[in-house]
Image 1 (cartoon, rainbow, N blue to C red):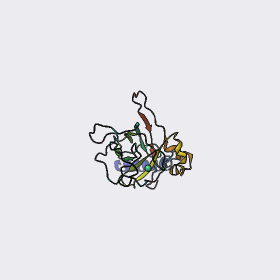
Image 2 (image 1 turned 90 degrees about the vertical axis):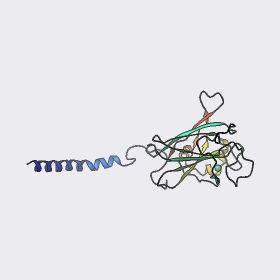
Image 3 (image 1 turned 120 degrees about the vertical axis):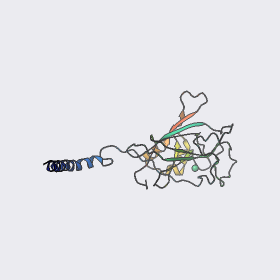
Image 4 (image 1 turned 135 degrees about the vertical axis):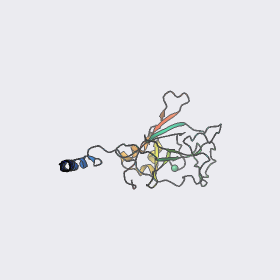
Length: 222
Ligand SMILES: [Fe+2]
């Protein structure tokens, strides 16, 4: 009796679960109801990813190791989150940035149009935790011959190919004359990579703050 009863209960439960399954599957479809976030557009890595890494690759680009002299430039606290299209944070994402120094020069042996500003680290890395948040202390990017102000980003996640984009300064007049920026024809895509470099509240030395969230697609290609 006991065994028959428990068999009947199992069947009953299984039947109940089976009846629920199609609805549950429907609710779990990505984007079935929730509005998905705008994917951050991919942009080319460009030719100046450092060909030799600095001695220091931390997230403070103003100080190389324990230098006493900080880099020249407008100090900027640059932060944001790495997200999936539903807004869930992505942890263990290695975020890398690289940009020119105050003289407009990359940390790259082929960028020789001017002397490097040797106190600027030029490149930095940050590994996200459970909130998907990253943070860098750097300088507001400067324009260099042929390009508007921008910061290069690479995001590396296990099992995916390296993903790259570029972040731009809102209100910068040169943006409209920059071929790589103008290649973003969708206004939503442009907005997704154009951020405010605004005065940091309470800063007495004119520091800036910028927020740049990166929304990655769910497939490796996006
Ligand atoms: Fe660049």
